[in-house]
Image (tube, rainbow, N blue to C red; front, side):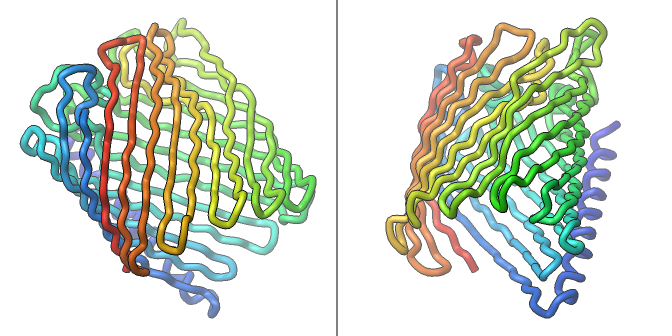
Length: 401
């Protein structure tokens, strides 16, 4: 399928999604007199400087530039319906390689939730995004610096969820189905092999042992389809199954969490390919020791579609910790630290990626705020050519209308 035809299909899909979101917003306003509609425009201007702009092991290049990020959020809510639509963009100009590293990314996303009585909850969400891979990431890891266009892509997807059971009932059930598609629109001779689609579904059963605590069991299935294979031995097309048990709780006003653990198995469609199995988990815990302090721990395992020939899938295991502190009515700070281990299955490559970031925010007025941040990113790999480290600093001004 040629690029022009693909682009037309994506544009048509974006228009259809916009129409669906618009239609969802209209009845919300009239269904209930107590319903509220809110329009929230926002504009952020950021200056960014990176001492290793191309994520290289040697010959580091310092890059800096301005990023303009406008967005508009439209939210409407009534006693039974909640819906949101967000349009956002990022326009960036940098002082490197002429115009090759400048970009204009756009996102349209929305969600719609309908509560039918006390036992039925239906949720739909979808998004269309035009984005890019920064040079030195994904396909361009570890290659020499060359002049060329960024790897740009379009991605769209949606999910439908249905939950049955009243909050006070002993059992609740949730079923979901989702699909996504990612297509690269630049450097297609090299990037067409990275185009893929996923289709998945899951069923979760909740056992409510108290008003704020539930045990759960879930199972799911995922299909991965690739547009064009690397070659006859490419085994990235696969089916993935998972099963987990766990708990979700909000025991007090200060603590909440969702912890699930189990087993995942991925079976390649290629004849003779080995079955990949892993311990599968996801956990999110939030603790508010005081009104001004929020601590959050997020950890889990997840498969990622591979961009490397010979690796059918990338198996990621990650852990992140964030500390948000509100020092006063005007001052706030956020400290983030994270670690990810990426195993390129069926190869000798494993990446260890660590990062830390600190940001301070100052709200001068209700509509005006300023930010200052710094971060450090490091990747150590068994493939030495992709090793790198870099420091990024940024300052920003945000207007909330």
